[in-house]
Image 1 (cartoon, helix red, strand yellow):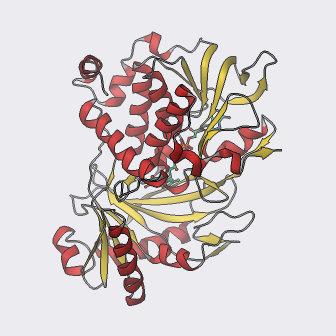
Image 2 (cartoon, rainbow, N blue to C red):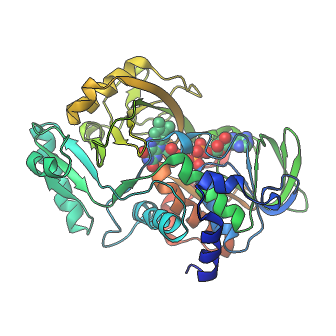
Image 3 (cartoon, rainbow, N blue to C red):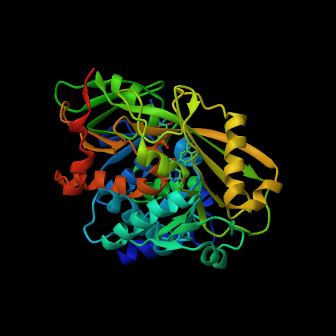
Length: 432
Ligand SMILES: Cc1cc2nc3c(=O)[nH]c(=O)nc-3n(C[C@H](O)[C@H](O)[C@H](O)COP(=O)(O)OP(=O)(O)OC[C@H]3O[C@@H](n4cnc5c(N)ncnc54)[C@H](O)[C@@H]3O)c2cc1C
């Protein structure tokens, strides 16, 4: 339960300040860069690491987070900002925890703790493009509703009643009321800030270059400028889990997948929901494209497009943003204009007004896809006191808050929540 005094203290800190302004106003002791000994050291200041740090610090654990750039400088600050799922369902599994559980954490951070994360439960409309897809998703929606999930099939007319800019000529839409959106940078920094307020130390500009297990137990973690020592080490390094794992001579099967996005200039509010399309999920239901070196559910394979994926929304600042491509290109983060144009055409099939709005900017980031497509959250049994919270793929912004809480609870209590069985690192993390 949230401590009432803690909440009122938090409100006092934040009253009248945006999250970033509040972070800048933190007393120096909260941003100490000089602490070299800690109980728990987290590498990675994305949403996974920041949420883990917050939930551990809330349990009064001694936590230090090292980030080589700024908080939210990689995928957690570059994503579309879509979150949520279809609720808890009748028998909550890991997916329910990560999606619906994270929604509860977003609500807590913004509504109870006073962070402006631009969070709102807008709902998601997913366009169905063909009669064949409609038949498939009619059955799928019925099965999900039987399992207790919040999802509806809408006619185009029903969709137009709640999203007037939607394409009324499509066969229908899926509607999920338990999905929403938030600003990626503000949200991730809110978690890091809340961690600092709860007593964690966040140290940015710390590029970890080597890790040495200590004979007495624990680890020595070397950055370009300092050495840190800890008892327990947590890897929250997203698409860089592979190279950071190599520092410990272990193989973590996570590959970087480039996601790219584009934005229009700011326009008055026209798009109310987050927007998707069934073209890709329908294609992946037939063939998800996975093999020994390729994760499932990508839009490209061996340099060729295999499907078109789509997600987007209108930001609070008025920009309409869309993206969708998922391509394995190593650590390449240069946007591909041809792919952006395909995505823009796809977006215009769902929200026709975007066809008349020029692209104002584009960007790309790297998503941490595991080779089997599942999250990797838990204890790595082939090393002592080593944990990982990653493999959140294309949904880590929305799922990272609960992933961090589940990891923190595991580290704090020593007991694994049974829902984490699906994400157990023992299934795939091996000696190098
Ligand atoms: C274009 C795009 C759109 C997306 N859209 C959505 C969406 O709408 N909804 C959604 O839920 N998800 C979305 N995602 C996915 C989501 O952004 C990621 O799954 C999530 O941000 C992963 O978080 P993370 O904390 O694991 O990784 P990151 O945010 O990448 O954080 C890892 C951190 O580790 C740091 N690090 C790495 N190596 C070192 C080192 N050696 N030393 C110190 N620090 C290190 C990095 O600098 C980085 O900050 C999207 C991603 C992209 C790229």
